[in-house]
Length: 612
Image: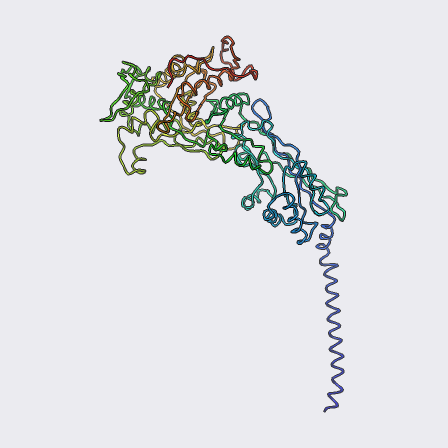
């Protein structure tokens, strides 16, 4: 038995050894088959990846121009520091990122996060670099494999701060945004509109990026282009803005805090929209400098678009609403008489007029022309809050106008139900007196004020402010409010507003040869400080073609600070240079025909009879 075991054992060992050898040979052949047949495509791609590079070429954004074709936003050539992870191992990539961080002062954690998100795609480390940075990269190129200086286009605003709040600015897409926007074709490093028109019309403006397939040598240097798909530039955008009118608005706001809105009353087209203080959107093209960052975060909030995002007590421009509410409710007629003594008592509380001693016996027409507070206190008590609120909402006040810029404030039009819900109290008569003159809880935005006066100008239809020519998506529909006022209401309000400018509190807005209708306002914001100065108007008075809202924060009486600015805007609109004779308006003349020169608009007439 022992000898049999000795004989079997060598054979078994031989067979076992042969089996192992055969298995290993089969395993090796299988691996070779996988490498040379099954995985040929994958490994060809890897090999090609070692010598081929895909370069994405961003598309130039579309040009934004004003209604006359003046360029407001375009693109310019710039350079960026780009990392190509496909040329490096993971360890090399980390080392290069660390060197770049020390060299350029960039956040290595941020660059690594971009690299993870981009996978093998190029990573833009730093955009819009200067000549010093280009030289620095060139000097250290031997230590920075996989890094190159690439030409790119960046957004450029040739007029700097001009119309900054309207145009907006652009910025790189964030990782959080990419989770949603990747489906729309956005990739890491892409630029998108952040605010203003750049954000609203981003899809329209951004275009389609191009691609280049480039063969590179063993050091990653391009040798030849194998294939190229050129970028498709974004579509151009022509907007309703009149750059020359905007220029006057911004010049008049310089050094002040406030906003100006100019509308075409029948269409709602935005002819000018200015907010002060402002900012230079070019600062967002690359890394923001520390001093710029401090400036945009200052207490005056230059990034805040006061034209649409800040609400203020309207003061006496709200008397337009109170007047319409009173006429429509039948609580007053144009020839109704009032005694103006300078004070009005509600219970034991005394409400003062803006003019000490009052105006004596007056009719309703004069009460609006001279903005007599005591008359409106009485009307406020007769009407009550709910009827005044209903009239205000019919003008579009107390809710967003629907302008597509975003971050629009709603303002506030209070009524008795609002007060019960908010304070768990009833509405008191003194609050009606306050509301009648646009004080108390009433708050509106400058753009709402422009829509309000445009509603008077165009016959009672509330328009939605529109930005593009022709209107962009979602811009065509208006809120649908059409006020069917009584003929006597219409006659009284329009006639009184014309007299406000001709010989009332708004004479500083007069322009030679043209009639206008307007209303001044001075709204107390903080007791003991200057009032907010308001002025709203439309012109010409008979066939309005422009509606204007001017608001200056804590600047004084609207008749003396805001109305003169409106006068300068109207002079620019009509093309009236300084110290010229009164032109004769042509019947049915169209907007800006002939087109005026760019000469500075002169100051409005001095020596106003009254300010309010």
